[in-house]
Length: 285
Image (cartoon, rainbow, N blue to C red):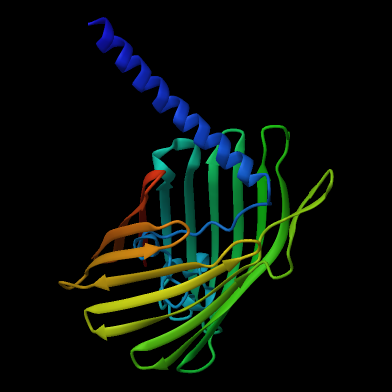
């Protein structure tokens, strides 16, 4: 009985200690740079974020050119529990407004909780320049609240991208975030946010099967290679799988459309850190 009690106590202590250690590590890494560019959308997560060439409601977090084909006013909500830890949760939302001049969008995201938070606000504009070419740009304001600061510190920057439909069933795209190397002013100078460049393509093998690939390169880091596949077994339903490097990780998810409501659920599995579930809802008016 005593041995069993000690074993349970030790297991509980190590679990809590592991979570606390992971949180401290994440905060330490975050201090090395300014606010990270968080991505959103459970469909994207299901495809390992190989999403730079997609026309989707959540393209304002990946490649604003992908907003160009939005035809109706819509709004979305997203939540992600990174590694099942409350302090590492990510919440995001967007509102999309198509007009005769192009498509406008506003979006926000908040990573973390309590005394540590990373927040981003964006205003995007996207337009189809031709039947095959779409472009988009977004003005951003990013902020970070640290435990030692009374107020959050922030900075402005921008991002933008293009999508080109090279063939009827094949598209390529590229996106860049923070090309001006914006960052937060600290005691020892500017703490720069990374410049992130993404490029990739997607190919529709059939009307029911789509594959996508992407390479992401950020300042000071090695490239990340991503790939995903999406199946449409029945109308209004999608099943997705993905894989990425740095380090090796798997993703999966499912999506379904109920009239004007689209629901997506995604999962990201990291071999060392565990499972990250995510959900997004999109309302089309």
